[in-house]
Image (cartoon, rainbow, N blue to C red):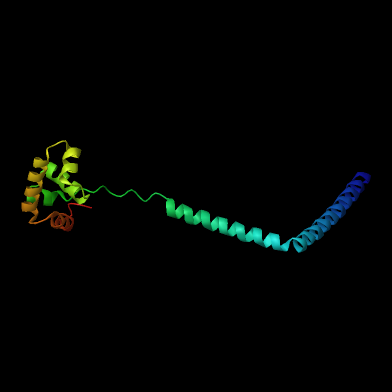
Length: 143
């Protein structure tokens, strides 16, 4: 019985000390908030903007979902009889390259490029480069 009374007394003192410590911490916290309220509010707002910026940054710079690769509408390519080399020349035309630049990139002569372009004009029913590129986009040959 004496042991039980001793334990009750220890628990009572412990609870009393814990309540006193809690009261002192609460008072200290109130004093801290009153003295530094402006800094506390600025810190909370800054933390909010930091979280918002991190969220917006993650959304802005995330990688887009893997898009399916562009196939260039193979049915139209087959129907018009456009060769793979002509399709390459058409892509270079759409990129705005000159005949000489296309010839250098494909390691062919400028005359060969002119021949491919002339055949593309016939197949796409175009009179100039811009017409050919516009028509190719309409048909889904270019992105």
